[in-house]
Amino acid sequence: MTDSVRQSLEDTVGAWLFDPVVARLSAALLGLVVLNVLFRLMKRTASRHLTDADARYRARKALGLLNYAAAVFLLALIFKNQLGGLTIAFGVAGAGIAFALQEVIASVAGWAAVSFGAFFRVGDRVQLGGIKGDVIDIGVLRTTLMECGQWVAGDLYNGRIVRVANSFVFKEPVVNYSGDFSFLWDEITLPVRYGSDLDAARRLIEETANEVVGDYVPQARTAWSQMVQKYRIEDARVEPMVTLIANDNWVEFTLRYVVDYRRRRLSKDRLFTRLLEEIGRTDGRVALASATFALVEAPRLEVSMRPEAPRNT
Image (tube, rainbow, N blue to C red):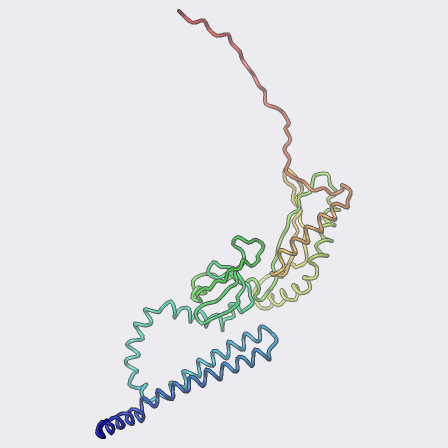
């Protein structure tokens, strides 16, 4: 390699190394790497020292958002001299981008509405976009649910993880099972045979309800009183209530009660189990009814036998 070629190559490399654009790009890349490493260490430290799952999740999400914000601030600081000339280009491109990414923009707006509007939070049971489940993550574009229901009855998990676009909060109703009032009203019906001791049946159902789901009443009463103060809503009854109707086949008792939204199926199982045990101890004074059909009168059957007419030959 000749001296002139070597000198030309050194001049080119030197000019490239001392070029302001290259220097800014190098500084931006180095800064992003440092920020990424720093926030990863902070996330690991938070996960190691925070024992509460909810606090750990919120800390990791907050650190992730701070990481993005710091990266944007760093890039804006490094390239601040170039941003002024790109304002018009950004304005022209922004209109096209907004039209092409309107669903993405709506999802980001939905994330802002969920984050600051208290639609729901992580851990709530919701129905969003036709999907019912527990919220396990709220992202900028999508909310992740652990689905309940479908082929599984009783509000239990079915194992599917569903991601719903945040834009659905503007398109469909958002049903929150555990927002300000983390209880549900549920009912069971008990058919009792005519001739049973109805007073004893009512007492039996009330005592069983107080035994099984009575512990929820003080908590539900406190939560509902807060609801009455916050919203224009009636002061509903949260204690177990037994009502009766009579139909053609039996007397039907309906038990209405409040229960934790996560314990609905288990509470119903305990109620029916205890009711059947207590009814069995009444020695027939209270008897369950079932669908029976009584044949009161058989229809009249008439048979007419006539001799066959002779054939003409």
